[in-house]
Image (tube, rainbow, N blue to C red):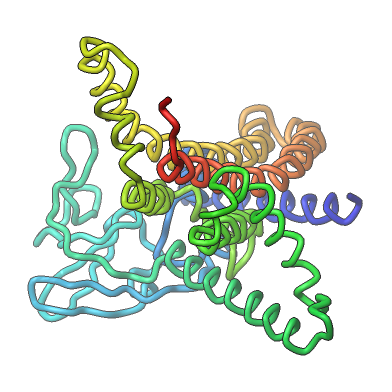
Length: 373
């Protein structure tokens, strides 16, 4: 616990430095007061990006750029995100194959021919949403980079575990296998077998193991506040939607006749009730995966937002009431951040467990044999 506390304290201090950098980004040259956009700072940390922001040095952002890969009207276009010069307001144009491209809030659009009054090349509608045409974007963003990184880490972990077993005598785990074996047995004995059954669990165990470790590893990466980690992959609704869709497909492809019979024509129920319940049961087929991806997305995103909001209190009080107020609030804010971060260490594992056990439950319901008599 002492080591975890030190790690969390380091996370809190790192985020504090990051927020301090952001708090000076909006400072006007002739202004003596700092302006703080708390919402913008939080959204910047939890949203996807074409580069890894490290810190701000003398008002200039320092980041690691990632490859931009676009399929445009003129074909494939590739370049590094650093060509946009860290611009997030659509004021820097990158010209490729005779096309003008602009980055606005992490998304790339075709730029207008002339700049607006504010210097941007993006046209906004009444709700401040860009109306410029977009292209197909296959870029390696923070989330995509973390996705590949987690895949590599999982391969190294389990290839190493397999080699450790091959070298050991009597299948006694050694090395990394000492860490993976209890977790694999936990997923097998406490998730797969109770929910799917002794006869059928082996068919689905590889998938359950994959999503458990995949979600858990990516959740852990989201808590580490420095490159090459820090991406909020599990807080991306497209990522959680994709995982839930895979569970949905596996569940319904493997659903037996009893599963579909209990959805569309429940045995032992009067016909009028069958006509009433069938649409409700059919809706339930889709609400199950919806609850899966929303639960994971909401819990992971909420944890990050709470931590960032607590850190931002330091700079809010500093800007509102002066440096002394900031110094007074800082210890309280950091203490709460440490507490919430310790809870987050548990939450990232719990959310992986919940997603896996619900997937196993849905699969078990679809493949179970029913005795209607």
